[in-house]
Length: 451
Image (cartoon, rainbow, N blue to C red; front, side):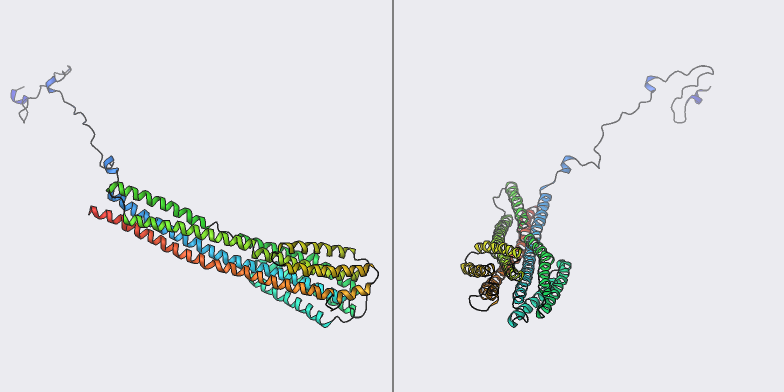
């Protein structure tokens, strides 16, 4: 091979090909191909370095500003909603209490009507016009109260419908008793006893259940615990703002940030105001529960039991010697009245008036047990100043007036607390907005130093 063939076009010597049948020798060391070694890995542009991950001061200030704004608005909004809810709860408690009083009046009216009907029945023939008018008035008032109660509380609708049907049945039975009594038929007495027994067996239990249900509703609404939610949030917010104020002081070497300090002051006012409002409401509700509302329940129960006793007094005489069960019922009701009157502080005249009636009843029982039934009936149905009707009427009238008075006090007590809760809701909402604005302004003053 010529020398020219051994030289490449680029002037680089090319080793001759190995003869056929031989193995090519490895290239010389100085001609060996060098494999490049990998260099150290350079930082990935996607993975941030610790310096990049660290939040700088302006970013922290912006986050702090946002946090203060959100915290202030949340506290203000939740506080406003909470105290608005408490105002609404007071409104519901007032309505439930009014319904409770309404149902108790229905009980009193029914037993007063029964007492009047049984007493008039003792006269025989046509009952005295005054007693007939009193019975009609009691029954008319009962019907009106049932309709009013159904409109006021739909939840009681089904029970009141059943009650109304029982009242209609009772009135029909009393009319049958009267019709037979006017004709001098002994069956009239049985109609009367059946009507009174049915009243106590079916009608009064419905009313007892309605009293319990509305009393429970009123008690559920008479709670101030929801107000503590605002108090807790405001305390947490105050702690967070104070911590932020400390961080700002250390970071910027300044003792006070005016905006954050003002924000903390507003939060402190919210804490104090919420605590005062909650304690005020709690004390007021406790006073209502143990004061006027308790007096309403006691007075209503007293009037119910008193009229029950008066009815049983007449039923004992109607039974003519076989009325031991009615006399025992009178004693049971009388004991309840005596116990209730002992709990009505400041009304000793009611106790003395009831005792006067109880003394007359004792005289009636002595006459009846002594075989002087006609004199006992005269004492029970007469209109003289020492008769049972007159003495009991004085007690019942004064008790009814007292019941109306304490019922009005309970209603007014609920109404007096509602404006306080509404004002608290408005002030807390405004306070929350002030916390947000003041805190944002305070942080923005530090942010300006970076612009």
